[in-house]
Length: 332
Ligand code: AQP
Image 1 (cartoon, rainbow, N blue to C red):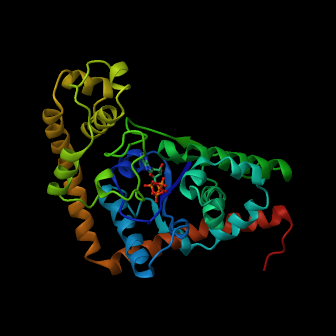
Image 2 (tube, rainbow, N blue to C red):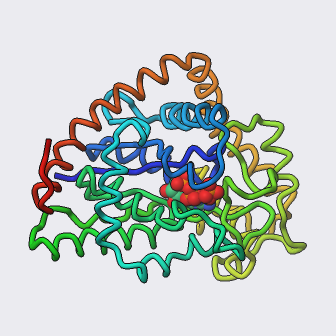
């Protein structure tokens, strides 16, 4: 059976990178797979959180999923901390993960920066918890943006190590699904840096909650270069900021990058940016409006998350019991 698991951290507001790199693909995939979509709130604890802000961010991410088109009845939609099996399997898998594998993770190096000794253990072992999230449901496919590819490879390695150690085929090796034109959306301020929730500059990203004026301002201020747009992908790829904006346009308008570059070959950025911001507003405005409607009834979001959590728990507890049998733990 093919089963999808994927999630997003409620660290701050979701942005266009999260949407184009992952969420939009989930919406399309929900018709082909059995899907489990999670708000990975335990992962959010790897950075300092204000309890009330975290609570609201969890609801906001859930609202973004639903507003973007995820059906909470058809799919399982819940927050990670509802199911304690994530943390429990995370511990078990951490005992099967050599430190050397974690030392290779580039995201930890980037996020920990120069003060690696001060980074918390959770940030370091984050990819093991992510492996547990996926394997707890024996998910076969994981739709993510390109930045998560290395973590997905580690999840496969951990699943393989577990299976070999216990001479079993218990865990499937999960396949990454990196789909669409915009698998790595870059910062609007620097075309060589990923668009990220944690970037200090608000102008580096378009948030899913931005209104039309804010989107327009951010796109107008987006970094570009002085040349008009080129007419080949080859020339575009030498210009990171232009490449990023054309990629975003293509993804929003449902074209390929090749089609988008043909359409705007020789255009000045002022003209292109008007088309881009129109496409961004047309695409995001209905989602933002729906999100705001959903967020007006927090109790209903909490109810949906609880309901999804109960469905997730039923699968997770069965698999965790099987893992305990395999590794020799006595069950209550
Ligand atoms: N810039 C991006 N382009 C394409 N996809 C992206 N994703 C994230 N940024 C981009 C994808 O969104 C999903 C959820 O990501 P996450 O919330 O787990 O955290 P992240 O990957 O660490 O994303 P951020 O926005 O950079 O968050 P912070 O700053 O908190 O670390 C994943 O599928 C991811 O690939």
